[in-house]
Image 1 (spheres, rainbow, N blue to C red):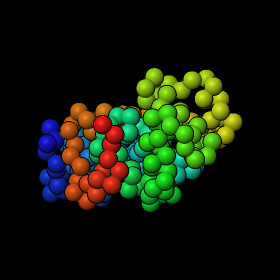
Image 2: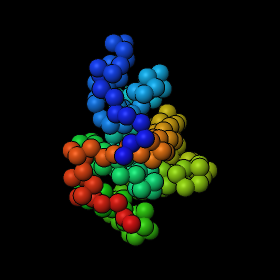
Image 3: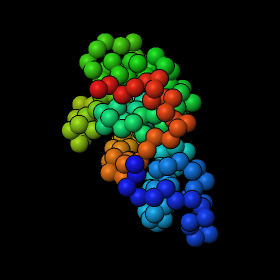
Image 4: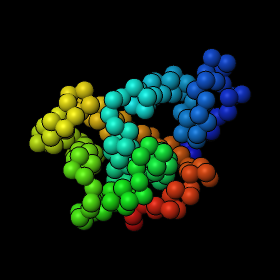
Length: 182
């Protein structure tokens, strides 16, 4: 159960109701602090709509963070979004296997993205070798966008965990279909 109430547009000042255009429970909790929610939306919207990073690779990086954090909310939401943005069911299973150190059929760039996300999530930063490989694969702009994406979603899973945001019923089937490893 969430630690703060899930607010509705009617609970907000008229000027803040736009913050719930996408009325997911995370946003309904964040609007308890409208200015923080607006700042949060700013970077999230850049990652989703402004970044030049390939959408499938972006979603793989986010899924890696969600898996490592064992965040049911993040995992369920981004399994759905990943499937919408080019991640296949085989990719999701391969991500789980790659994380466990098992061999996969993922392409080298996908494995590189997952490695970078694992390093940032578990060690706080990518190694020099991994970052250099990202620069070589993507160029500076997309390497920075990948870094920002991974860092932002590491923050997101901590917000989700601390605020105890519940998984909405419409996202539960994705969690049931691809359960987080124990």
